[in-house]
Amino acid sequence: MIYSKVVAAVGCSLLLGACGKTPAPGHDDASPGAVNASQAIPAIDMDRYRRDIEVLSSDAFGGRAPSTEGETKTVRYLIDAFAEAGLVGGNNGSFEQDVPLVAITATEVAPLRFSDGEQEVVMRMGDEAVAWTKRVTESVSVTDSEVVFVGYGIVAPEYDWNDYDGIDVTGKTVVMLVNDPGFATGDESLFTGNRMTYYGRWTYKFEEAARQGASGAIVVHETAAAGYPWGVVEGGSTGPRFDLVRADNNASRAVFEGWVTTPAAEQLFAAFGHDYAALSAAAAKPGFDAVRLGARVSTAISNSLERSMSKNVVALLPGSDAPDETVAFSAHWDHLGIDPNIEGDNIYNGAADNATGTAALLALARVLSQETHRRSYLFIALTAEESGLLGSAWFADNPTVPLATMAGLINMDAMNPIGATRDVIVVGYGSSELEALLEQSATEQQRVLVPETTPEKGFFYRSDHFNFAKRGVPVLYAKAGVDHVQYGREYGLEQAAKHTAERYHQPSDEIHDGWDFGGIEQDLNLYLGVARTLGDRKSWPNWFAGNEFRQLRDASAAARAADRNDAVDD
Image (tube, rainbow, N blue to C red; front, side, top):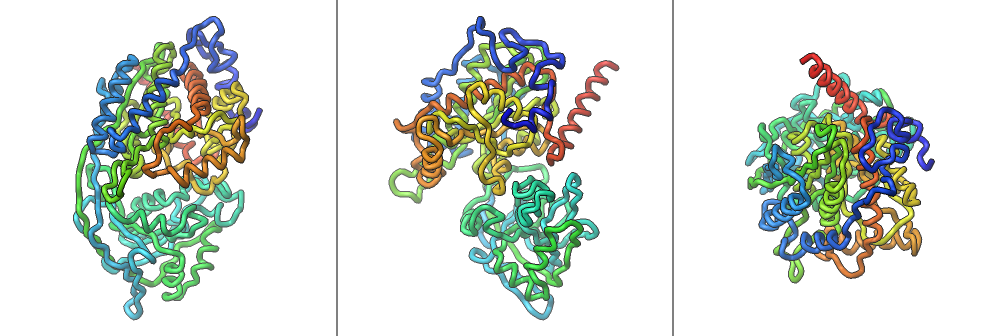
């Protein structure tokens, strides 16, 4: 086997079909996901798939930005297509799920002023620092908030790590390092070594700081640890920041959040008698204690607010024997809209990102609607991924089916039309037992699973599946490989780099005659193999032992067991 760890961990429950599975019509229990030769198998209509992409990425759809005419057209197109395939609305009979959004635009951000009463360090917005507030309000301010260095800002019981142990940061401002200790030290015994965990993501650090009661939360930017240069952080701080409209208007978040450059952090630490390099090194070792820097910080932020309502599209294909259990597919339908400041072609058509994934939802729904499987299939087309995974965050907080009853989720984001490949890239390789099913499906295609080449950049935490993983649902995020069947690996790498440089998040991301759909067809059939098996099994895949989401899945298993006992008692 290509991935022996998966095989050893999964055993009979998923691979061998010897744990009580009832085969669905046309399925061979000894070969999960395969269909008997005597059974007519519906094929993916690749011509229809291409037409879906052409429509969704056309200029008429205006770049599919949330809360625009492009969204209205996109949502209508998806609903009509799902209904035509025989699916029903997956939100209490409706295909739509309202997602309330707010655009928060900072109109004025005061510099970060650090002082101990005698000396002062002032960080300018832009080249030294950026700051914002997630609170849905026109203005916020922090005055003389005590500054505490909390290392990596991580609370991870499974790694026996708590950077907040022994200190109360309520009302204080915390300063944190990006990524996690395994990356900093290269020590494979710390977290997962070079591969970033959930705890290394800056989004987690801000969320944890808020849970700890901090008024301010600052991450120190280091290019290698973050995976991108300061220019990306600075550029992302301008213009509107979209968020969900929650019941508390995000009052539970820190008053302000932000980043500072490494040189600015070094200056700050030195000004108040500390060595940044020494404290950073100490923070990467177990048992680090938070350090009060001896300074207090003040800042103020003014905002303009614009509220709107967007939509997730949710379609359901009911199962035969276990309709209350689901196998889910996700893809984001949104893209970047129209930029009026660009002369000439100013429509971000988003053909690869992510009309390919959105059309994949429709293609798989059309095939699976012609088959019978014991579990239901849920197809979720999500809004506002490009604004920070907001549609999936809303769905995960307001699921249309209990997340504990999801056997697993397959996410499809930016399928690469370079042609057939010998490999399949698994983002987050080594995370869950779903990879065993993926491997079997890949083996049938004579393909191999390979991990992503830059696990330290945390791409597993940058697409919609992450919000489901955060709640314990095992997820698969597999991408087209680069080892091209005809032209080899160098060609595949070259094409991927060319797309990133010339078309990614550009108006030039359009469908054209040079697209080779052979690789996408491979991947759609790959996903079908996994989905068919998962749709017919009685087992519940889990995360591997030691994974940061394992405890959440174990808790959902306990909840399912309790529900079954309640049903028996009733």
